[in-house]
Amino acid sequence: MTSGYVCSNCGYESAGWAGKCPACGEWNSFKEVNRIIGKPKKNNNIANKTSMNHNKVTNLTDIEVNSEHRLKSGFSEFDCVLGGGFVAGMVILLGGEPGTGKSTLMLQVAAKVAAQNKKILYVSGEESNEQIKLRSIRLKINPKDILLLCHNNIEQIDLAISEHKPDLLIIDSIQSVYSSEIDNYLGSVTQLRECSSYLTKIAKRENLPTIIIGHVTKDGLVAGPKTIEHMVDTVLYFESEKEGFFKILRTTKNRFGSTNEIGIFEMNTRGLAEVINPSIIFLSRNDNHSGDVISCVSEGSRNFFIEIQALLNKSNFGNAQRVSVGYEQKKLAMLLAVIEKHTGIPVSSNDVFINIIGGFKSKDASMDLAVVAAIFSGFTDISIPKSSVFIGEVGLNGEIRVSKGINEKIKESVKLGFLKVVVSDKAEVAKKLESYCIKVNNINDLFKTFF
Image 1 (tube, one colour):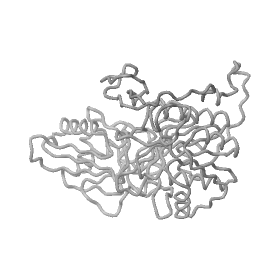
Image 2 (tube, helix red, strand yellow):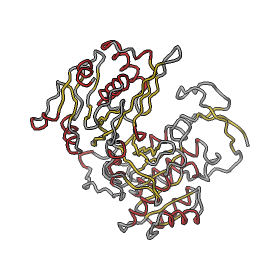
Image 3 (cartoon, helix red, strand yellow):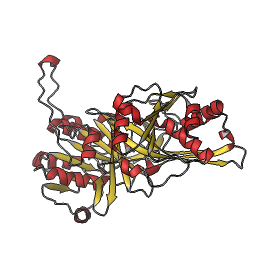
Image 4 (tube, helix red, strand yellow):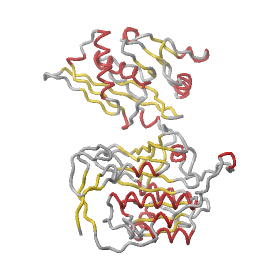
């Protein structure tokens, strides 16, 4: 056995340690690994075993494509994130922190797909048959048509796929899978890269939708080189706030759909349940408190109503604190500078705390106006009625800009029972919706209208 160093970002191997990877330029990414030497090599490597019959040069116009058929997961929230369901040969990488519920979600998806008379192969390299059976009993899952393989050898998994011909493959997890033809230890960068490539080629060869569960690092990224994410078709992250009951499924890469969609799930005694009307979990419309403001943001094709809280306190130290949960820290600093510049309110001498209820995170600029209104409300200690929604982007000159999809957001606001929607005076609103709108030109107009 001999030792070497491997870049955890790109997989570059080196005999000695280096501060900067010469391949990808990442700093402090080299990790020491042990390699087994003297192991005989086999002539038939992974690439040869999984070679596809698509290596013939073909004119693009001669290729016939059947109408796209997507396999439904049984969860409308999951299908929305995927772009409509599973595509044949689709490879999905699902990442998330330990305890988020990745394995629970996959077992429930397996049960719902199996209920459509489909055959599922669930491969687990981390749990025993009995452990998975106990979880299925707790979740009250019907195990019909769910085939279980508790093995972590990639060649054995390939044989099981060839024998049983499943309609959906689930790997839990990629860090526990290894190839006997690679002389690196289990979970090494080389094993991760080669096994991911092997599974991807199997999925394309068999037209088999495949879900690969991956652990994440302390930085929140899928453990292993970034090349894993480049190999797959879709990258999903399953996340939740600490001690939170709601889980959010996001996508950062999707070759078959949008990367802006999110799905929301709730953890209960029977596992994960999808939240059909997500806006309800982010709103508390019973009481009026200063600093509480409601906004509407877009995530893909869907609109979410969120509650933003602001708390301002006189700073007792030299530098005032700026704390933001769910809202960009730099954007908050910019808005505070705009407020002090154009209204004269001395927010620089106050500690400012911003929080979005429910652990929701968004980069939609539509909630800028609501954040400014919440800061005004927190500073003056004047509450804003919860029957109002604030939608708009704030520029550096203090002007209110039009939000994207403003008419759709106003329509949904009216449907949910909101009485007034505060928007930019430049917004072109449908005539039947004008009576619900309060138009403001800049943040000074906003302050004079409400405070």
